Image (cartoon, rainbow, N blue to C red; front, top):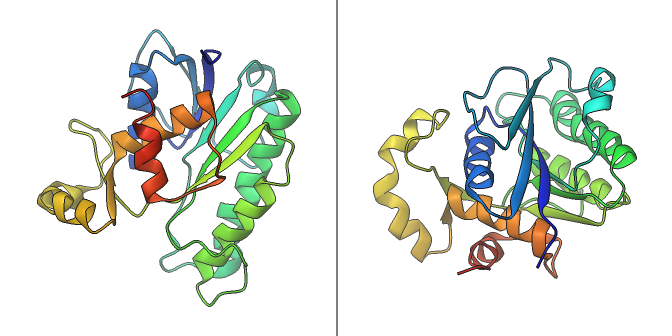
Length: 222
């Protein structure tokens, strides 16, 4: 049996992070959950502790409260739409690395799971700006001394019923799920959450977790 997970989640006021949080609160594998947000996530639970903090580039005020955890599920991210590469790099690579470096300094042996994206560019040399930046972020995270680093690369995610932070247009896309699943383009956000929990608890032989791996990992306890 795996050790109980004591998890830090970032981005739980966004759709992906909220979906992952819901799965963590329901999972018997997860003993404690700490969420770090700029605003309240809107959830209360005996497992849950929340820290409100405006500046993710300076976590020093939170340091006394960030130790004692063995997994980070990093779901914080921004869209690259309308953004120049330097700013997208700052909000994607620089911010993620700062959080990761802070956490590994406080929690030796921690695992780190990062929400990346399908078609991320591990070579860092492709034409797509966002894919290059995500690729560099993945690569640099994997150089840090975590017990494991997993880069999750979902494509189309379908939200969990009743979520507070689901993007509005997803309300109208539910009918597409069977088709997206059949052609290998979509999965449920609940499956992503379960996959992240299972990777942290049991490990996985790959560091780049593609859509088919997400579905496989989500069924670990089935």
